[in-house]
Image (cartoon, rainbow, N blue to C red):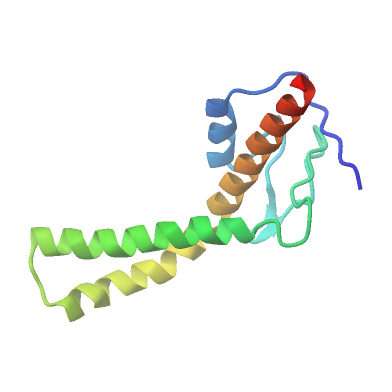
Length: 132
């Protein structure tokens, strides 16, 4: 199955990341990525970029979300310990709810960033293939 993306000019990396953080198409920025709260659009109606190129494509977004959750949990425990030493049980009782909330709060951005990473990597692959 071939997917075509109709983009006039190749956006800069900073532009792609800005679009990802704004939850817009990384290729053109023309459409929003999500139709509803946890429902992603199948593709961009402006440029044709397919969001989920294959089944399981967004498994990588789970890793992005997991890394952020660990960073928030560990960071909060270390910050609490540095600012106001408490028992580990108290620190964990504050950090664990954060670690549960982060994946839900960051769900959209994790998927958007993963899509942007895939878009940039695919674009780099295409350019390398053209040079050969």
